[in-house]
Image (cartoon, rainbow, N blue to C red; front, side, top):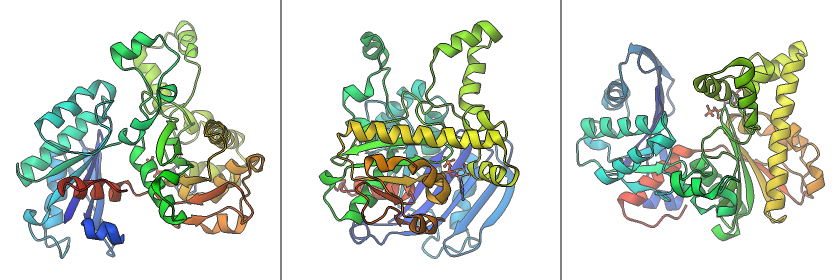
Length: 416
Ligand code: ADP
């Protein structure tokens, strides 16, 4: 089947076209046919698309909304310009898989989309006001363009974390707030952490129930996940993606009393707090330079910028703190930590800085192996003697979404 995977953000649409089937999943021979991103919906948009093995195509065009954005992407996919051999018309797209950010407590697995499911996604808009509406727009646009009968599947970012026990997901707040408003930790990046668990299982050649790892998704957004017996038992993002690790522009963990203090000192409004915590904090806030880890590392190396170093050090320390905390939470049962995401996959130096001092919990990094694994390579970076292993696996959320789509459409059980 040719599956179109759509990831609709508030002002962007990412897509991949993946050929897969139950047989291909079994043999691990799914094929990506094309991918791309359309950014800045609502103004003059930038569009980058690429057929596998071909050079990137870049265009710009005024794009008013998600419907237009998906229209442009679909027309390109079937056009003779793209030269995707497998796709000659819309009928050659067999199903659509959507990344849906928030499924709340209702959705613990991927589901086939119908009007009831759309209502369910709408019911969670309050919890993800920027993302869920964009996801719904993506579903509606795909229905309009590909027709009512095209099977569409929702894959939730929160679903993998639905196995967390209440001792992980409840906050130390009055319990009625959970009952009344479902205020709790939901966690995000679930599809990525689930993919990492699957890759680790393949690598270690073990059963799903034997997966005991700490997964570290380190990109612009960053989260850690404790995976015990193959299931998420704790994760660092919370009610929203703001909590936990220090991120590109998000603060991560803070004492919320700071907000009241700042309210009295500077009279900030709620909207200003929100912008500060989500868009002006993290690596950007501390360094005063950039949210981008690669640029910070360059600043540090070339100009010895003190605040660039500070931002990087705080980032690394926070990750280390979560590793330590989850290691203990899992009663020392974790066999490995796994790095993924733009920073985790590409920066050997950050991995090295994070792991400094982790020999106390049995982790020894092999410098040569670590330095060699960048740019999408996958493998072990700890020494042979290391009791706690460390791996790098490039994440592939789109592949998992495509596979879930096939399994749901074919009514086959989910088997990673
Ligand atoms: P997103 O959360 O937006 O998907 P990514 O997973 O693409 O983000 O990660 C982006 C981050 O990865 C940026 O901070 C970027 O600087 C960082 N990154 C990418 N390549 C490197 C590299 N070679 N060295 C250090 N950081 C890198």
